Length: 116
View: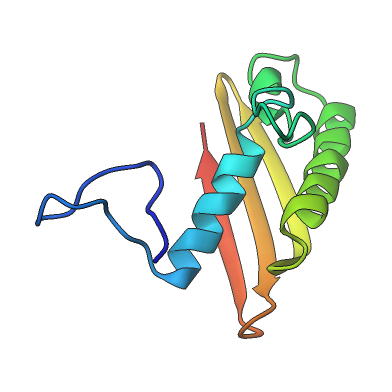
């Protein structure tokens, strides 16, 4: 059973479940929007992307963030996915992340678009 993220309830009043593809996407979202130091037993878990929502927009910042996100995804989810591309788009107070990856279990290519 994969617990859906964010935690919620299904029509029966039980903890909502997610299929394997949705669970992988949920894990990507959790990793990208967790600030390092938030998890008690995993102080290096996360990417720090949320801290950059209000940072001045620049090509250098986007390039640095792409590399950081790619490294975080490979470190924490590398056994489940192979990251093929990460795109960062910063517009006003919205941060949009496009992560293209291959699910190792199935070999299927997926795209996760996450905005905050």
